[in-house]
Length: 482
Image (cartoon, rainbow, N blue to C red; front, side, top):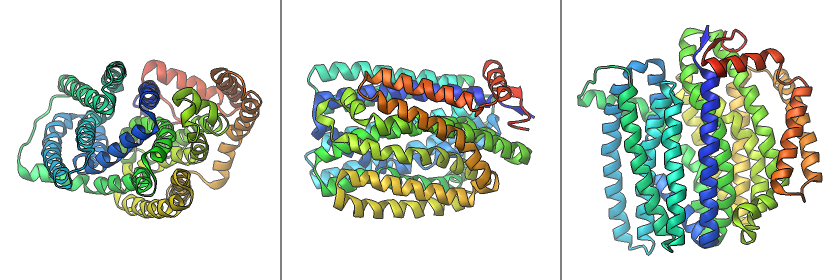
């Protein structure tokens, strides 16, 4: 069976994440250096609140699009305009309610919260368009749109910081940039979408809401699993502690988007394989988990050993308290990589129900862990809560889902070579920790790559197949898709 450009799209989507998130980290580092931990904490708090109020507007529509349009690309126009109308109506309603709530409370940070809400709502529309690019296996257009946003965000953000506009100016620039990127993305998608008929009636629109409801529940639970730490921390501590936590969390979140990018190519293809080839479904899952694990080891080692020089390099000496937070967050990164794979397998298998109750269970664990750990350890407690939640979530997902495709013995065998290579990398990085940061990281990556190759983690046959798939866009790979 032909694998539909899976590896090529995965590589391109990972490149998208690496480029745009690197620019995002640079942008965040500039904010930290210009504004300090206090305003960084306010920025993180405003975005956490905005991410909560935008949940009804997102409503899991991205996952619905990737699954359904991934199975039948001819439905692109129907879902773009139909779901887009629903999303737009929800967005207007939720923004109006948020404005009313802020007016009643008379908060001093009213402008910051409103700008953050507007930016987050528009960003959700850009993510909505990206879901269509991924479902149609055209990630090059996602790269163009996101790169446009990231570059303009960085350049104009730097200008407003130098001009002294501070945080309101930064958020205003982000709002304008994401609006422009969304308009351009819509125009591109309208041009490349396959011909198709659009059906307009309330029954069809309500059907989209009904179909996306399980995804919305998952999205809400993931918010509590990923964002609630900042809200709870703000209740127990000041904006400065929130800033220290946010600085470390920014790096963690950006690294977790590497598996998210791979899943952008993985989910549409797995949705097809689930209804066409059970054997191909299982083999592709094992292949993906293997390479996700290989990719996850180096950032874990680098974050754990080089946390202090990384923090100083990016944010300056004033953010050194973020270093132990970054070290703690290196551990859950390992779990987050395969958690992405497992959750997308459940979505591809139309098992949103089990995934929904599971994510709500872990959300409850995360909220409880935050309340307990933050009270005792401040912002480091928020990091410990993430470690606890990701670990429990990963263990449960393996027991319920991944075990049927990858037995414990096979999993340990898969992990052995990357772990050993990672240990050699860790020793080298530790000995070179006082060198130039980029030189230390380069040395570690070189040793890790050599170890992976020397220990036969990636076979010659797999490397040849990967090269063929990346260069040609598709290939018959019986060892991957069957």
